[in-house]
Length: 164
Length: 249
Image 1 (cartoon, each protein chain N blue to C red):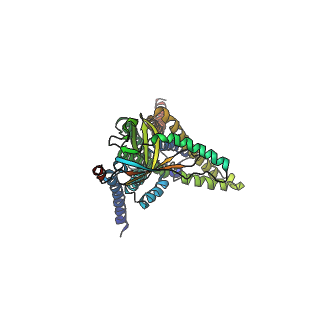
Image 2: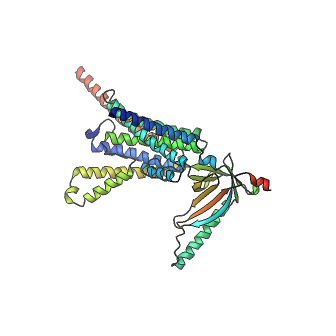
Image 3: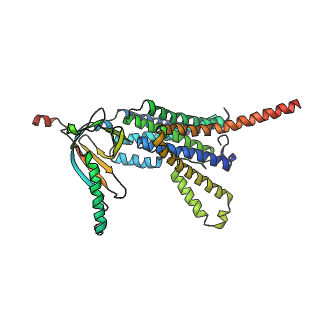
């Protein structure tokens, strides 16, 4: 293949990358669409805790910090997370609705929660599929921990309503 | 700062260009992370993220990263294309100013879009970050091209490596006396400092100006684009005045 033709192939390849990736971004099921609906909290767990078992005093400190962090995060214990199309996050208990708004940022890997227009928390979306959503809440580097929240789509097949 | 090319550039030209462009790149990067949770001058990292997303089967996220890398590539490509194709067609200053003007328009577009149209949707976020990566590609392509790859303002990995190499070279006395090496060290240190300062400035500035940070970046780019225009106009004006004086005498 001549170099002139190779250059044309190269330009065509770059153009196809641009067009192809743009089309995927426009038409493929994005995390923003995927997250809409109701999700049930299945698990809350603290991962990567750096508390050393050998250091009792340090462990106590970590435990104290852990309690403090969990107290702050407790506000987000919604039970059922309903991500509305209007980007409102509804809790199962209607009285607990605190005007929470949800936004997806970055390359679709960050879930940001806002209250009265101000960001209150952001999560790394570790996994998102039609049935399962795993969120990581990063907190203070001092503790080097991650709270992992595992959610499952509430009744993905619609049989839940029939059961009731 | 812009009109000279390759080896005709002085150390002062490179320091001025490097400092101002790195400052603006640092500002754009931090503003983007704050607004969009996405870096705009982290292409090395994006290659790794692209591979990671593909391995996890996250096609959407993979496509987003591919789009961003492609736009950075396109920016650098376009920048050099204008310089190469513009040679002999229009003045060198115009060739070098066009990428800065395009970068200015890209960042201005992002600022205006955020102020008047942004609805916080993910798709908008992806395309606005893409516009910023395109702008950074334009800038990096321009600075690297006209300075013979001496100035690279968004490539901090390479810069840190070069800086480390220079610092290790200064362990030998004769290298410490080598003006070329010392000049290069000063240039790299200036770029690194300007980039960090730009980031800090944008981080603090965002608290007060919010999307206005992008307009401030545009202002810096305007200074870069018009600095040589001002100098050229002034030289022409002085030349004309002297010519008139000579004729009247």
